Image (cartoon, rainbow, N blue to C red; front, top):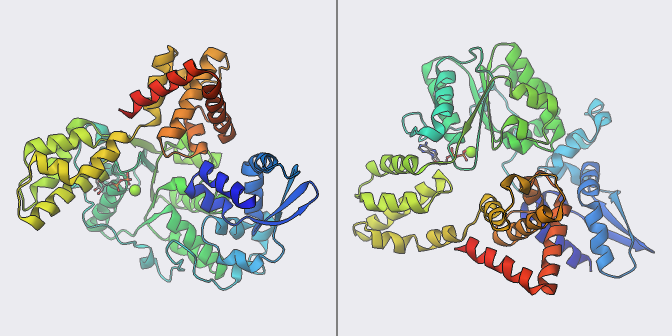
Amino acid sequence: AWARIRGRLREEVGEVEYRSWLRQMTLSAIEGEEAVILLPTRFLRDWVRNHYGDRLRSLWGAENLGVRRIDIRVAPESRSLEAAEAAPQADGLAGAAPVARAHQTTLPLAEPLSSPPRGPEPRVPESRNDWAAPLDPRFTFDSFVVGKPNEFAHACARRVAEKPASPGFNPLFLYGGVGLGKTHLMHAIAWAISFNGQRNVAYMSAEKFMYRFIAALRSQSTMEFKESLRSVDVLMIDDLQFLIGKDNTQEEFFHTFNALVDAGKQIVVSADKSPSDLSGLEDRLRTRLGCGMVADIHATTYELRISILQAKAQGAEVEVPPRVLEFLAHKITSNVRELEGALNRLIAHANLFGRPITLESAQEVLHDILRAHDRRVTIEEIQRKVAEHYNIRLTDMSSARRARNVARPRQVAMYLAKQLTSRSLPEIGRRFGNRDHTTVMHAVSRVAELMQSDSTFAEDVELLRRMLEN
Ligand code: ADP
Ligand code: MG
């Protein structure tokens, strides 16, 4: 039963969340009506209790073994385990609660670090140069193609690169979806600033920041950590959304942030959402992040995709016919990384076989990518189609209205989102007006039930599904 329950949860929340929070659950005992579940840290215990407690209870209930309550505890002997944990559990331990912070040196933080199961090995910075993370030599302003969707972000980035810490541009907050050029722009700023002069630039992902912070805590070198960070002139943190739920690292970042801004140093941050939409970040941090320049990179347009493809094809040894570029720009719309990947594959293929690139060969070589792309449906599309179909407003997909004529289509859209995309339940919930994952779960099972009992409804949903799949 336990294996089944875990399996269900894994399916429901998705692999990433499962690994982050749930993988380490063990079933310790079933005592009468109560199942005792253990987790290695207090942080994990609280997290699982708050986010998955109810779900665990109902899954146990469904097994009909008489279990009615769930007791989630910290495993008694997991102290040493804690230190060996990689993110995000490690963050929980790093602070373990405010009390722990005061006794940093005596708590398990100082335990020797065994190598984490994933992610880079945390290392404590020895000197400031250690912060100079390797920058991708291809990610410069020269190679960044500017178009409508990114011109504002690009202009801000240029400005910061020319005159770091000028009023109104500090911090610079860049945000946008995956593969739209955030990291590229950040590296471009870092290159330009280091090229221009003597400034000390520190660029790292938020994840790296966390690893280093935790490593410093463990090796009792937080002072060095703080000092080395505060001696930089420009601090750039990529993918800040990673710090959501990592409260201790967030707090450390907040202090670093304030110290640097007060000292007139430039901060550049990127994230997948705007500061106000980054729920899960502490309010005071969000407020400060939003008080400089906030620039978003929008989804690419056809024109921008064409320009990017032209720029990338220009240096290639083989010629890529305009028709092929147009075909790619039409077909691969999700992000620039995939677009680039497709083009590179065509070029590599042509080089390898010494054959010219044609529309036909492109279709053949990119067969799998194109197919995956055709099948991919976004949550927005689902919401739009479903709203249209039931003749309700698109905004009602995320509104709080509960009237049946609105709530039912919304449930259908959630159901289809679960069926047709690879999004996890919490993620789907967020896209439907920040609803809880249990609401999505409920919607999914409700629609499935109705489809069983009401064949007209079932046909309706099937029709929608087919429309979306094509
Ligand atoms: P993000 O950090 O937003 O997920 P990246 O900066 O890693 O995206 O960009 C993904 C890929 O697309 C990189 O190889 C990058 O060089 C390329 N790219 C994105 N936008 C542009 C652009 N406007 N011009 C040229 N290349 C771009
Ligand atoms: Mg990136």
